[in-house]
Length: 441
Image (cartoon, rainbow, N blue to C red; front, top):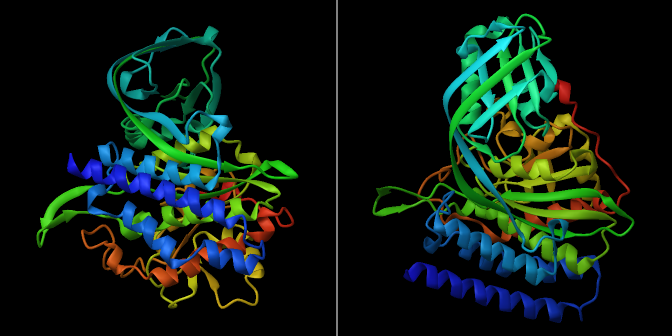
Protein backbone atom coordinates (compact mmCIF):
# COMPACT_ATOMS: atom_id res chain seq x y z
CA UNK A 1 0.00 0.00 0.00
CA UNK A 2 1.17 3.50 -0.79
CA UNK A 3 0.36 4.81 2.72
CA UNK A 4 2.55 2.15 4.37
CA UNK A 5 5.46 3.08 2.11
CA UNK A 6 5.05 6.74 2.95
CA UNK A 7 5.11 5.97 6.65
CA UNK A 8 8.22 3.80 6.38
CA UNK A 9 9.96 6.70 4.65
CA UNK A 10 8.83 9.11 7.39
CA UNK A 11 10.09 6.77 10.10
CA UNK A 12 13.45 6.29 8.43
CA UNK A 13 13.82 10.04 7.92
CA UNK A 14 12.86 10.80 11.51
CA UNK A 15 15.30 8.22 12.85
CA UNK A 16 18.16 9.65 10.79
CA UNK A 17 17.31 13.19 11.89
CA UNK A 18 17.31 12.30 15.57
CA UNK A 19 20.49 10.25 15.36
CA UNK A 20 22.19 13.24 13.76
CA UNK A 21 20.75 15.80 16.17
CA UNK A 22 21.62 13.71 19.21
CA UNK A 23 25.20 13.48 18.07
CA UNK A 24 25.43 17.22 17.57
CA UNK A 25 23.73 18.03 20.86
CA UNK A 26 26.58 16.54 22.87
CA UNK A 27 28.59 19.62 21.90
CA UNK A 28 26.08 21.97 23.54
CA UNK A 29 26.29 23.14 27.12
CA UNK A 30 24.23 21.43 29.79
CA UNK A 31 22.70 24.66 31.07
CA UNK A 32 19.05 23.86 31.80
CA UNK A 33 17.77 26.96 30.01
CA UNK A 34 19.89 26.46 26.91
CA UNK A 35 19.25 22.72 26.73
CA UNK A 36 15.51 22.90 27.12
CA UNK A 37 15.12 25.49 24.35
CA UNK A 38 17.46 23.63 22.03
CA UNK A 39 15.81 20.27 22.61
CA UNK A 40 12.13 21.05 23.20
CA UNK A 41 11.08 23.46 20.49
CA UNK A 42 8.04 23.97 18.29
CA UNK A 43 9.80 22.72 15.17
CA UNK A 44 10.53 19.32 16.74
CA UNK A 45 7.09 19.14 18.34
CA UNK A 46 5.43 19.75 14.98
CA UNK A 47 7.66 17.22 13.21
CA UNK A 48 6.53 14.42 15.51
CA UNK A 49 2.91 15.55 15.57
CA UNK A 50 2.72 15.57 11.78
CA UNK A 51 3.80 11.95 11.60
CA UNK A 52 1.46 10.63 14.31
CA UNK A 53 -1.57 12.64 13.16
CA UNK A 54 -1.07 12.19 9.41
CA UNK A 55 -3.80 10.77 7.18
CA UNK A 56 -1.47 7.85 6.43
CA UNK A 57 -1.87 6.73 10.06
CA UNK A 58 -5.63 6.41 9.42
CA UNK A 59 -6.54 7.30 12.98
CA UNK A 60 -4.20 4.77 14.69
CA UNK A 61 -7.06 2.44 15.59
CA UNK A 62 -6.38 -0.39 18.02
CA UNK A 63 -5.52 -3.62 16.12
CA UNK A 64 -5.05 -1.79 12.79
CA UNK A 65 -1.88 -2.10 10.64
CA UNK A 66 -1.35 1.64 11.06
CA UNK A 67 -1.09 1.46 14.86
CA UNK A 68 1.83 -0.92 14.38
CA UNK A 69 3.48 1.66 12.12
CA UNK A 70 2.93 4.31 14.80
CA UNK A 71 4.53 1.98 17.38
CA UNK A 72 7.56 1.49 15.12
CA UNK A 73 7.90 5.25 14.71
CA UNK A 74 7.82 5.83 18.48
CA UNK A 75 10.30 3.00 19.04
CA UNK A 76 12.66 4.54 16.46
CA UNK A 77 12.48 7.88 18.29
CA UNK A 78 13.24 6.19 21.63
CA UNK A 79 16.21 4.41 20.09
CA UNK A 80 17.50 7.61 18.50
CA UNK A 81 17.18 9.38 21.85
CA UNK A 82 19.38 6.69 23.42
CA UNK A 83 16.88 5.07 25.81
CA UNK A 84 17.21 1.53 27.08
CA UNK A 85 14.47 -1.04 26.68
CA UNK A 86 12.32 -2.17 29.59
CA UNK A 87 14.08 -4.99 31.49
CA UNK A 88 16.67 -5.14 28.70
CA UNK A 89 14.13 -6.58 26.29
CA UNK A 90 15.03 -7.07 22.63
CA UNK A 91 12.57 -4.36 21.58
CA UNK A 92 10.96 -1.17 22.84
CA UNK A 93 7.63 -2.79 22.01
CA UNK A 94 6.03 -4.21 25.16
CA UNK A 95 3.93 -6.83 23.45
CA UNK A 96 0.87 -8.49 24.95
CA UNK A 97 -2.45 -9.94 23.87
CA UNK A 98 -6.04 -8.90 24.39
CA UNK A 99 -8.33 -11.80 25.16
CA UNK A 100 -12.03 -12.23 24.62
CA UNK A 101 -13.42 -15.14 26.60
CA UNK A 102 -16.84 -16.36 25.52
CA UNK A 103 -18.41 -18.38 28.29
CA UNK A 104 -19.59 -21.88 27.29
CA UNK A 105 -20.36 -23.66 30.54
CA UNK A 106 -19.50 -23.69 34.25
CA UNK A 107 -20.29 -26.22 36.98
CA UNK A 108 -19.47 -25.92 40.68
CA UNK A 109 -20.10 -27.36 44.11
CA UNK A 110 -19.39 -25.96 47.58
CA UNK A 111 -19.07 -28.60 50.32
CA UNK A 112 -20.83 -31.07 47.99
CA UNK A 113 -23.77 -28.74 47.35
CA UNK A 114 -24.30 -27.58 43.78
CA UNK A 115 -23.87 -23.87 42.96
CA UNK A 116 -26.04 -22.28 40.29
CA UNK A 117 -24.15 -21.41 37.12
CA UNK A 118 -25.47 -17.85 37.20
CA UNK A 119 -23.79 -17.40 40.60
CA UNK A 120 -20.29 -18.03 39.20
CA UNK A 121 -18.15 -15.84 36.94
CA UNK A 122 -14.75 -17.17 35.91
CA UNK A 123 -12.18 -14.68 34.60
CA UNK A 124 -9.60 -16.75 32.76
CA UNK A 125 -7.59 -16.96 29.56
CA UNK A 126 -7.77 -20.75 29.56
CA UNK A 127 -10.19 -22.74 27.43
CA UNK A 128 -10.60 -25.37 30.13
CA UNK A 129 -10.15 -24.66 33.84
CA UNK A 130 -10.75 -26.92 36.84
CA UNK A 131 -9.94 -25.89 40.40
CA UNK A 132 -10.67 -27.23 43.87
CA UNK A 133 -9.46 -26.83 47.44
CA UNK A 134 -6.20 -28.63 46.63
CA UNK A 135 -5.41 -25.98 43.99
CA UNK A 136 -4.88 -23.59 46.90
CA UNK A 137 -6.44 -20.49 45.43
CA UNK A 138 -6.39 -17.59 47.87
CA UNK A 139 -9.87 -16.85 49.25
CA UNK A 140 -10.89 -13.19 49.44
CA UNK A 141 -14.21 -11.44 50.05
CA UNK A 142 -16.39 -8.65 48.72
CA UNK A 143 -18.63 -7.77 51.64
CA UNK A 144 -21.84 -5.82 52.02
CA UNK A 145 -21.22 -2.09 51.71
CA UNK A 146 -18.16 -2.39 49.47
CA UNK A 147 -18.11 -1.11 45.91
CA UNK A 148 -18.58 -4.27 43.85
CA UNK A 149 -16.83 -3.14 40.68
CA UNK A 150 -14.00 -1.29 42.40
CA UNK A 151 -13.27 -4.34 44.54
CA UNK A 152 -13.50 -6.69 41.55
CA UNK A 153 -11.05 -4.56 39.54
CA UNK A 154 -8.67 -4.47 42.51
CA UNK A 155 -8.60 -8.25 42.71
CA UNK A 156 -8.08 -8.60 38.97
CA UNK A 157 -4.94 -6.45 39.26
CA UNK A 158 -3.24 -8.60 41.91
CA UNK A 159 -1.76 -11.21 39.54
CA UNK A 160 -2.87 -13.90 42.01
CA UNK A 161 -5.16 -16.90 41.54
CA UNK A 162 -8.19 -15.98 43.61
CA UNK A 163 -11.54 -17.36 44.73
CA UNK A 164 -13.57 -14.22 45.40
CA UNK A 165 -16.61 -14.84 47.61
CA UNK A 166 -19.20 -12.15 46.91
CA UNK A 167 -21.88 -11.42 49.48
CA UNK A 168 -25.37 -12.28 48.24
CA UNK A 169 -26.49 -8.71 48.83
CA UNK A 170 -24.92 -8.10 45.38
CA UNK A 171 -27.16 -10.69 43.68
CA UNK A 172 -28.93 -8.15 41.45
CA UNK A 173 -25.72 -6.62 40.08
CA UNK A 174 -23.48 -9.69 40.17
CA UNK A 175 -24.17 -10.63 36.54
CA UNK A 176 -22.70 -7.35 35.35
CA UNK A 177 -19.25 -8.67 36.26
CA UNK A 178 -19.50 -10.77 33.09
CA UNK A 179 -18.29 -7.66 31.25
CA UNK A 180 -14.88 -8.17 32.85
CA UNK A 181 -14.18 -11.16 30.60
CA UNK A 182 -15.21 -9.51 27.34
CA UNK A 183 -11.84 -7.78 26.92
CA UNK A 184 -8.80 -8.45 29.09
CA UNK A 185 -5.07 -8.69 28.74
CA UNK A 186 -3.59 -12.15 28.57
CA UNK A 187 -2.49 -13.49 31.92
CA UNK A 188 -1.66 -16.82 33.53
CA UNK A 189 -3.75 -16.08 36.62
CA UNK A 190 -7.42 -16.83 37.17
CA UNK A 191 -10.02 -15.05 39.30
CA UNK A 192 -13.30 -16.77 40.16
CA UNK A 193 -16.22 -14.77 41.56
CA UNK A 194 -18.93 -16.71 43.40
CA UNK A 195 -22.06 -15.46 45.14
CA UNK A 196 -21.91 -17.17 48.52
CA UNK A 197 -23.14 -16.81 52.09
CA UNK A 198 -20.40 -18.93 53.64
CA UNK A 199 -16.78 -19.82 53.01
CA UNK A 200 -16.49 -23.39 51.67
CA UNK A 201 -14.06 -25.94 53.07
CA UNK A 202 -14.21 -28.10 49.97
CA UNK A 203 -15.14 -26.94 46.50
CA UNK A 204 -14.78 -27.80 42.83
CA UNK A 205 -15.28 -25.47 39.89
CA UNK A 206 -14.95 -26.38 36.20
CA UNK A 207 -15.40 -23.95 33.33
CA UNK A 208 -15.13 -23.91 29.54
CA UNK A 209 -14.58 -20.79 27.44
CA UNK A 210 -14.03 -20.00 23.78
CA UNK A 211 -10.89 -17.85 23.67
CA UNK A 212 -9.93 -15.39 20.93
CA UNK A 213 -6.64 -13.49 21.03
CA UNK A 214 -5.42 -10.25 19.42
CA UNK A 215 -1.90 -8.84 19.64
CA UNK A 216 -1.08 -5.34 20.93
CA UNK A 217 1.99 -3.41 22.06
CA UNK A 218 2.91 -0.52 24.31
CA UNK A 219 6.16 1.25 23.50
CA UNK A 220 8.42 1.67 26.53
CA UNK A 221 11.85 3.24 26.94
CA UNK A 222 13.96 3.63 30.08
CA UNK A 223 16.53 6.12 31.32
CA UNK A 224 18.24 4.50 34.35
CA UNK A 225 18.71 6.63 37.44
CA UNK A 226 22.01 7.44 39.13
CA UNK A 227 21.60 6.96 42.88
CA UNK A 228 17.96 5.77 43.04
CA UNK A 229 17.69 3.27 40.21
CA UNK A 230 14.94 1.30 41.94
CA UNK A 231 12.64 4.32 42.20
CA UNK A 232 10.63 5.13 39.07
CA UNK A 233 9.09 8.23 37.56
CA UNK A 234 6.75 7.51 34.63
CA UNK A 235 5.89 9.83 31.74
CA UNK A 236 3.08 8.46 29.59
CA UNK A 237 0.52 9.15 26.88
CA UNK A 238 -1.61 6.93 24.65
CA UNK A 239 -0.85 6.68 20.96
CA UNK A 240 -4.02 4.94 19.79
CA UNK A 241 -7.12 6.74 18.55
CA UNK A 242 -10.44 5.70 16.99
CA UNK A 243 -9.55 5.13 13.33
CA UNK A 244 -11.96 5.58 10.42
CA UNK A 245 -15.62 6.56 10.67
CA UNK A 246 -18.48 7.82 8.56
CA UNK A 247 -17.43 10.70 6.29
CA UNK A 248 -18.12 14.22 7.49
CA UNK A 249 -17.74 16.77 4.69
CA UNK A 250 -15.67 14.21 2.83
CA UNK A 251 -13.33 13.43 5.75
CA UNK A 252 -13.55 10.04 7.44
CA UNK A 253 -10.20 9.90 9.30
CA UNK A 254 -10.17 10.60 13.02
CA UNK A 255 -6.57 11.85 13.11
CA UNK A 256 -6.43 12.32 16.87
CA UNK A 257 -3.90 15.15 16.71
CA UNK A 258 -4.82 16.34 20.18
CA UNK A 259 -6.16 13.01 21.47
CA UNK A 260 -3.52 11.86 22.06
CA UNK A 261 -0.80 12.38 19.50
CA UNK A 262 -0.15 15.54 21.52
CA UNK A 263 0.53 13.64 24.74
CA UNK A 264 2.62 11.02 22.94
CA UNK A 265 4.65 13.75 21.29
CA UNK A 266 5.30 15.24 24.73
CA UNK A 267 6.56 11.89 26.02
CA UNK A 268 8.97 11.58 23.11
CA UNK A 269 10.25 15.14 23.56
CA UNK A 270 10.73 14.60 27.30
CA UNK A 271 12.67 11.41 26.61
CA UNK A 272 15.07 13.30 24.37
CA UNK A 273 15.41 16.13 26.89
CA UNK A 274 16.11 14.04 29.98
CA UNK A 275 18.49 11.76 28.11
CA UNK A 276 20.59 14.75 27.06
CA UNK A 277 20.53 16.21 30.58
CA UNK A 278 21.61 12.78 31.85
CA UNK A 279 21.42 13.78 35.52
CA UNK A 280 18.30 11.97 36.76
CA UNK A 281 18.76 10.30 40.15
CA UNK A 282 15.56 8.27 39.80
CA UNK A 283 14.92 5.97 36.84
CA UNK A 284 12.59 7.52 34.27
CA UNK A 285 10.21 5.31 32.29
CA UNK A 286 8.68 6.68 29.09
CA UNK A 287 5.56 4.82 28.00
CA UNK A 288 3.32 5.19 24.95
CA UNK A 289 0.20 3.16 25.70
CA UNK A 290 -2.06 1.38 23.27
CA UNK A 291 -5.78 0.60 23.56
CA UNK A 292 -6.73 3.53 25.80
CA UNK A 293 -9.73 4.33 23.64
CA UNK A 294 -11.14 0.80 23.99
CA UNK A 295 -10.71 0.44 27.74
CA UNK A 296 -7.22 1.40 28.90
CA UNK A 297 -5.80 -2.07 28.34
CA UNK A 298 -2.26 -0.91 27.49
CA UNK A 299 -1.81 0.91 30.79
CA UNK A 300 -3.42 -1.97 32.66
CA UNK A 301 -0.88 -4.39 31.22
CA UNK A 302 1.99 -1.98 31.91
CA UNK A 303 0.92 -1.64 35.55
CA UNK A 304 1.33 -5.39 36.02
CA UNK A 305 4.92 -5.27 34.72
CA UNK A 306 6.11 -2.67 37.21
CA UNK A 307 6.16 -2.67 41.02
CA UNK A 308 3.67 0.05 41.95
CA UNK A 309 5.37 0.55 45.32
CA UNK A 310 8.50 1.67 43.47
CA UNK A 311 6.71 4.20 41.25
CA UNK A 312 7.22 7.56 42.92
CA UNK A 313 5.12 9.54 40.43
CA UNK A 314 3.34 9.23 37.10
CA UNK A 315 2.88 12.14 34.67
CA UNK A 316 0.20 11.03 32.22
CA UNK A 317 -0.16 13.57 29.41
CA UNK A 318 -3.45 13.83 27.56
CA UNK A 319 -4.65 16.43 25.04
CA UNK A 320 -2.33 19.41 25.55
CA UNK A 321 -2.56 20.85 22.03
CA UNK A 322 -5.17 23.53 22.73
CA UNK A 323 -5.37 26.38 25.22
CA UNK A 324 -6.87 25.62 28.62
CA UNK A 325 -9.83 27.56 30.02
CA UNK A 326 -7.29 29.94 31.59
CA UNK A 327 -5.55 30.62 28.27
CA UNK A 328 -1.91 30.03 27.35
CA UNK A 329 0.85 28.90 29.72
CA UNK A 330 -1.53 26.88 31.85
CA UNK A 331 -2.79 23.33 32.30
CA UNK A 332 -4.71 21.34 34.89
CA UNK A 333 -3.94 18.24 36.90
CA UNK A 334 -6.63 15.60 37.43
CA UNK A 335 -7.10 14.34 40.98
CA UNK A 336 -5.15 17.33 42.24
CA UNK A 337 -6.48 16.98 45.78
CA UNK A 338 -5.57 13.30 46.11
CA UNK A 339 -1.81 13.89 46.59
CA UNK A 340 0.55 16.83 47.03
CA UNK A 341 2.16 16.23 43.63
CA UNK A 342 0.53 19.32 42.13
CA UNK A 343 2.01 21.52 44.85
CA UNK A 344 5.47 20.08 44.18
CA UNK A 345 5.13 20.87 40.49
CA UNK A 346 3.99 24.42 41.20
CA UNK A 347 6.94 24.95 43.54
CA UNK A 348 9.41 23.84 40.87
CA UNK A 349 7.77 26.26 38.42
CA UNK A 350 8.10 29.26 40.73
CA UNK A 351 9.41 32.24 38.82
CA UNK A 352 8.06 31.06 35.46
CA UNK A 353 4.95 32.28 33.68
CA UNK A 354 3.35 28.83 33.73
CA UNK A 355 0.58 27.75 36.13
CA UNK A 356 -0.88 24.34 36.99
CA UNK A 357 -4.49 24.33 38.23
CA UNK A 358 -6.71 21.67 39.80
CA UNK A 359 -9.05 19.89 37.41
CA UNK A 360 -11.96 22.30 36.69
CA UNK A 361 -14.25 19.47 35.51
CA UNK A 362 -14.67 17.26 38.61
CA UNK A 363 -18.10 15.99 37.60
CA UNK A 364 -16.56 14.33 34.54
CA UNK A 365 -14.37 12.09 36.73
CA UNK A 366 -11.33 12.62 34.48
CA UNK A 367 -9.01 11.17 37.13
CA UNK A 368 -10.53 7.75 36.40
CA UNK A 369 -10.85 8.11 32.62
CA UNK A 370 -7.25 8.04 31.44
CA UNK A 371 -4.17 5.85 31.71
CA UNK A 372 -3.16 7.16 35.13
CA UNK A 373 -6.11 5.40 36.77
CA UNK A 374 -4.71 1.88 37.02
CA UNK A 375 -1.57 2.88 38.93
CA UNK A 376 -3.51 5.45 40.96
CA UNK A 377 -5.79 2.67 42.19
CA UNK A 378 -2.63 0.97 43.47
CA UNK A 379 -1.65 4.06 45.45
CA UNK A 380 0.73 5.70 42.99
CA UNK A 381 0.59 9.52 42.79
CA UNK A 382 -0.46 9.18 39.16
CA UNK A 383 -2.12 12.18 37.56
CA UNK A 384 -3.10 13.31 34.09
CA UNK A 385 -1.97 16.71 32.83
CA UNK A 386 -4.28 18.27 30.24
CA UNK A 387 -5.55 21.51 28.77
CA UNK A 388 -8.66 20.10 27.10
CA UNK A 389 -11.81 22.13 27.72
CA UNK A 390 -13.97 19.10 28.40
CA UNK A 391 -17.15 21.17 28.63
CA UNK A 392 -16.52 22.69 25.21
CA UNK A 393 -13.74 21.00 23.22
CA UNK A 394 -14.97 21.36 19.62
CA UNK A 395 -12.79 18.66 18.02
CA UNK A 396 -12.85 15.97 20.71
CA UNK A 397 -13.41 12.56 19.06
CA UNK A 398 -14.23 14.21 15.75
CA UNK A 399 -12.71 14.06 12.27
CA UNK A 400 -11.72 17.69 12.77
CA UNK A 401 -9.04 16.80 15.35
CA UNK A 402 -6.30 17.85 12.91
CA UNK A 403 -2.85 19.24 13.57
CA UNK A 404 -4.00 22.59 12.15
CA UNK A 405 -6.26 23.03 15.20
CA UNK A 406 -3.30 22.85 17.62
CA UNK A 407 -1.18 25.68 18.98
CA UNK A 408 2.36 24.36 18.58
CA UNK A 409 4.04 27.20 20.47
CA UNK A 410 1.77 26.83 23.50
CA UNK A 411 2.03 23.04 23.37
CA UNK A 412 5.82 23.40 23.41
CA UNK A 413 5.59 25.64 26.47
CA UNK A 414 3.46 23.02 28.23
CA UNK A 415 6.01 20.29 27.52
CA UNK A 416 8.79 22.52 28.85
CA UNK A 417 6.73 23.24 31.96
CA UNK A 418 6.23 19.52 32.58
CA UNK A 419 9.98 18.98 32.22
CA UNK A 420 10.86 21.78 34.65
CA UNK A 421 8.10 20.99 37.14
CA UNK A 422 9.28 17.40 37.52
CA UNK A 423 12.80 18.46 38.51
CA UNK A 424 12.72 17.75 42.23
CA UNK A 425 10.80 14.50 41.80
CA UNK A 426 13.28 13.23 39.22
CA UNK A 427 16.33 14.22 41.26
CA UNK A 428 14.86 12.53 44.34
CA UNK A 429 14.60 15.55 46.62
CA UNK A 430 10.78 15.50 46.60
CA UNK A 431 8.41 12.54 46.78
CA UNK A 432 4.65 13.06 46.36
CA UNK A 433 2.26 11.60 48.90
CA UNK A 434 0.50 8.39 47.88
CA UNK A 435 -3.10 8.12 46.77
CA UNK A 436 -5.28 6.76 49.59
CA UNK A 437 -6.62 3.67 47.91
CA UNK A 438 -9.50 3.25 50.34
CA UNK A 439 -10.90 6.58 49.18
CA UNK A 440 -11.12 5.51 45.55
CA UNK A 441 -14.38 4.29 44.04
